[in-house]
Length: 239
Image 1 (cartoon, rainbow, N blue to C red):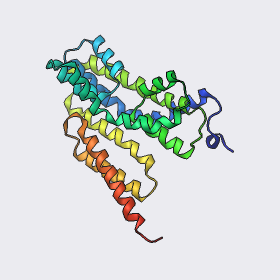
Image 2: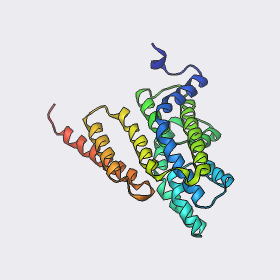
Image 3: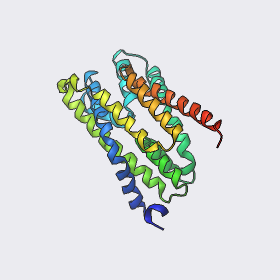
């Protein structure tokens, strides 16, 4: 049996595999991080405050949504509730990943909870779908999350320092959307997945101008609906 089939022999091997798995996708993280950093700078935060917020929040959409509320002097409870609602998808991610980590100590689960990302979660779920008993899987998850965090924080800090010097013509928000959509490709394995991915991509691209990254939310909802509808239609076709 090959090493790929049996999983990872050591935590280090699993960690590096997680880093390597997410590496091709981090290009989509860079423009989003730059945009977030620029927005943080525009809100009047100092570089140190911006860096601290980026590390503590570690969620670009929530950060961008919270900034204008902070500037407007909105009560903290409202800001926290807004960020929570925007990032509800991470609750879904955590619920889906939790069964694979139920035997870990609390300190490990808290650590992995911080490093839940769109990219890392998608790649992890794909891997454990093929290998449910994958050994050292928490190290794989941590490696993917660490890689995204490093790229995200670095690009956000660069965006903060660059400020308004980045031309709007670069349309970094749109580039970020394309980078996230690239995650759909490895999951297309059948007609239902193709319908879901195609619908999600088209809707997300068409809705890209919407504020607060709502285009991605619309794309996700449309993709889920298209996938579910396709599965029902395919089930009616005689074998």
